[in-house]
Image 1: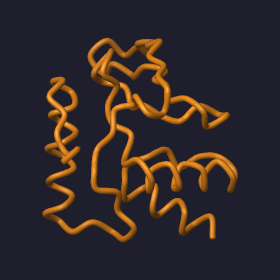
Image 2 (image 1 turned 90 degrees about the vertical axis):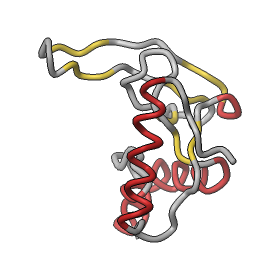
Image 3 (image 1 turned 180 degrees about the vertical axis):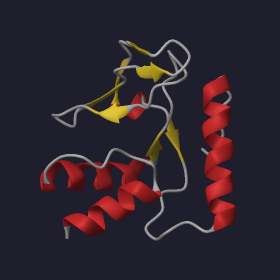
Image 4 (image 1 turned 60 degrees about the vertical axis):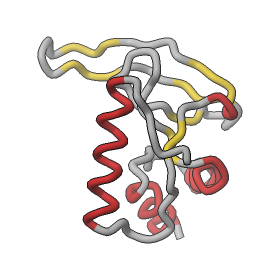
Length: 116
């Protein structure tokens, strides 16, 4: 079952590491609220669930240009975390993948769509 949970997380571009409980928490959170998006503070990092599953946070990102990790201190309640929809329960089509790419690019610029 872990592989199935990881597939759902991959399809939705979410973190796939951790034990079964962590994977299941991420799948349930995404199903209820949508995919966690890019960080609204640093614009490059990916927001993820905290280990306790009660908040969303960004630890930053790796800057390819400088070859260094850039830290971020973004933290939010789950209800305030940036989200994208839809949440995929099957592998997205090519068109859906392109829409996810467009949503991701929009999130980097601070113009997030997909909440309709």
